[in-house]
Amino acid sequence: MEREKQQVNANRIEAELLRWKEKEDRFRQLFSFDMSTNKAFLKEKLRDYERIIHRYKNTQNPTERFTLQMLRQERKHIEKQLYPNLLVRMVRRFVINPVRRYFIQREISIHKKANQKDVFRQMRDIGMDSHFSKATRMMKQENKDFSLPITHYVGDSQRMENQLLFNQAEDGSHKLTAHRVSLINDNNAAENRSHTFDLQNGERFQAREAFNLLNGRAVCKAGNWICLDLNDRDAAGNYRMKTFPSSHGYDIEKSLQTAGVKEIKDPAKKEGLITALGRGEKVSVTIGRKSFLIEANPQHKSINIYNKDNLKLSSAVAQGKQNVVDIKQGQNLSGPARRNGMKMN
Image (cartoon, rainbow, N blue to C red):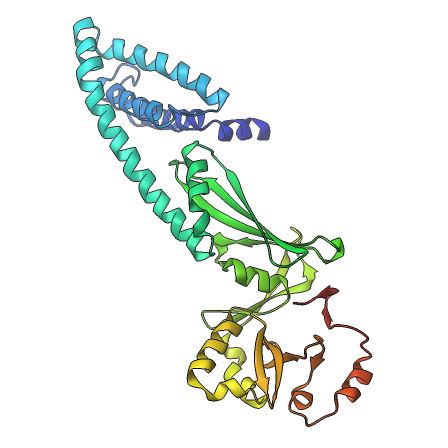
């Protein structure tokens, strides 16, 4: 039974015909007259069959093409039943039907353009709108469900692989439903990470934000700070999300002031700094007379500070109030700071 359902779902024309058959069965229960001979019902059925034929006329699916061939024969049968006079059928075929097909095509065209606008907005929301033309080509090929691969390097040996997953609804429109992001290290497979963001559940992150999340940093969305728990996966293999709402009380500006970040005193620099940290970036700042890299840490209501060797420091060390040697001995670190086994950028 499950296999039969999958076959029907793969054949869109068959699925449309089954929906029409269900409508016909419901009408039989409601009315006493014979649906197979009722002219009003047959005319509506004929119009719907013409719409289906026109919508899927360019399908490349062999099963759908065969179903379409059978449907055309069924349409001719209904035409003969409704219009037994040959002359009437010829007038319909060469005068009425072309006009009707024009309006059907216009309706389909309007629907497709609206759908393309929706898809463009969806791709723009995750920073992938520059690849919209690729998605459009796939949609024009009448692909039911498809994925769009997009890969780019983010370092000498680190690349980001994106898979945009599209699904087609019953009305033929496509929707971007998921964004699978993989962070691949060509030199060390142990550092590879992947996560699928469910766009239908509101997990909409720009590509750069997704990169930062996979690197273990936090991103701010609508006042909520979000990060991935890189030590905990769900049944689907995705990292669990941790959310720190505004009620959690994380004040990033206060954290920057406490850490003595110099840029916080300049309104223009402060705004740009807070915006970058909200995107999950690791940002270069000045504390005292030295440069450091910082990132937001909403869980502990603070910021993480790193020196040029990527060693994580306390605010006191960065401000020169404590000796870094004591911190190194306490942490027993012999190399760059690491989070969950992956060297952080």
